[in-house]
Structures are given as structure tokens and as C-alpha cells.
Length: 355
Image 1 (cartoon, rainbow, N blue to C red):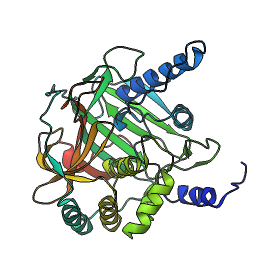
Image 2 (cartoon, rainbow, N blue to C red):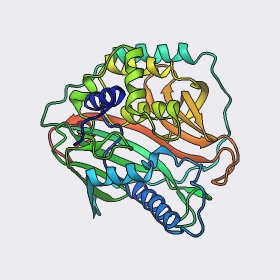
Image 3 (spheres, rainbow, N blue to C red):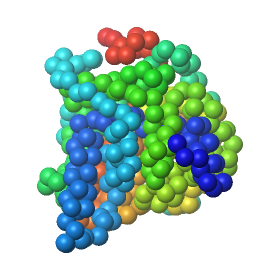
Image 4 (cartoon, one colour):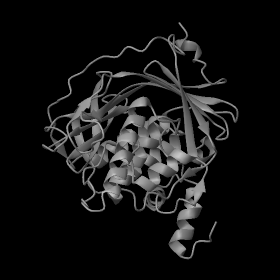
């Protein structure tokens, strides 16, 4: 590995060992399909040297884990998955439910966003989180729905929302151990190599993906944490503030974050330019709440919280204006976190859910 030549590169490399690589390091069938579509489009575009075309401007929803081609290839190299059919599943059979793919675009305002996130941070700080042992697994059960391109081998064209379905994830506290995703009637084993690229422009620089100790060691000072997030996500599409906002959602969605760290995360979110408050938002389970949101390229991403407890419920993304992908109000992704727990064995269910 070549030594970094500049001070900011040294800082970024140091922070890469502190900040976790957000998001589950496994690709669901829907996400794999989206990654394949993106890479195929890039290969086709690169190969057509006699007819060059500009790079697509539209950003895919972050549910698909799509980034620049170099980053996508690097992530694929760091983590591999094995998909096997599972007729009975690890737990109860998945119940896929079609939901309206177009919703009413809700009004949003920057007024009140900071005060609301202060309430969210206070609620997070009071939340008791279970300890995770070095050989244990974090279990997260959720409902999710993703969009896919209607026409194969295309990007930026008309898209369709898949049916909302159950997703279960087992993430090893030890990054050298395999994890598991059960989704869409399939068991997806996460073969974790113990490395994960955090800098899309420096594929040779790698670090361990997000672990329990890494998340616990994040700064609890909002200003310091936000600076770390900006440094770690520098250069990521579609822009500085959107990348930071996305990092937050990806970090809290499928993990267990200590209360003091979660509190700092939400106070840091309040400092991101463009963050607004949406008074009524609905997650994939049909639960209503309030949301903080951020808009990029005509797509709004919302993090939804319970009206009373101010605890995180899930996410929702949709278009707020007409684009080649669809009309204003078209959902591009939805999720709802149903339960989180710590279990001793990959594939095991928490005691209170066995029945």
C-alpha cells in the first residue's frame, strides 16, 4: 500500500478505521439486480467509444447500494454472498404485500427541524441498548420495498416498486465471521473478507467494515462527528450533504447504536444543510410518524420517527417532481424496522419472536 502524500488523505485514512462502513454488507436479490444493471450500463457506455454519451445524472436510490463503478467493484470484491433457496425460511414465511407506488408529496419545512431532532436525540440517549458480545450477532427484522428498472439493462428510465416483504439480517459482531440475510424466500450468506473500501477513489485503501466496537467508539460530540462523517464520505455521489445524510440512515437502520452515539448522530443530522421536517410520513409497516428529510436530484429521503416516543421507525424515499424514472410522488424505497435483538447464533431468532 502506498503511503498517503497529503494531510487530508492521512486524516481520511485514520478516520476510516474509526467510522464504520454503513449499511448491511450483503446484497439482497433486488439490490444485486440493480448493481448488475448499473455495471452493465457502465460497461456498455464505456465500450461504445465511437458514440460517447454523458454519464447519467440521476442518482439511484441508496437502497440499491450503487455508487461509482470503481466503488461498486471494490465492494463486490470485499464481500461475497451465497444465495440459496429456502422454502421454509429461517423464520416465518415472508408475506409480500403490494402497496401504492405513488403517494402524496407532503409539505416540508426547515422550520422546526432542529428542535424536532433535539427531541429525537434526547429520546435516543434514554434508550437502553443491549450489550453485544464479541461472538454474538445483531438481529434486525424489517419490512422493505425497493424499485427496479422496468426495462432491463437500463438506468434512469421508468421504474417500478416491488412488493413490500420481510427482511431478516444477522450481522456478526466479529467482522471476520459470516453473516446472514433472509429475504424473498432466500438465505443469503455474507462471506465477510474482513475488509471494506471506504474511499471510492482509492480502492487500494481498505479497512474493516462497521463493527460493534467501531460504532461504539464514534464521537459523541455532534460537531466532531459531523466532521468525521464529511471526511469519510468525501467525494461520494451525489454530493457532500446528501452523502452525509445517507450515511446516517445507513448506519442506524440495521445495527444497534449505543444511546449516546445515537444522540450525537441525530444532533449532527440537524447541522446538515437542507435537512427539513415532514409532519406526516408513513413507513413500510403503515405506521405514521414525523420525519426529517433531505432532497437530492428530485428525490426526497425521509427518516421516520414515532410521534410520541420519537424513536426511529423506518425510512421512505420518493420523487418530489417528475423525472424520467417516474412521476412526482412515486416511491423509490420504503422500510420499517420491526425488531432488533442480540442472539448467540447466526440464523437464531430472539426468544420473544419464536412463537
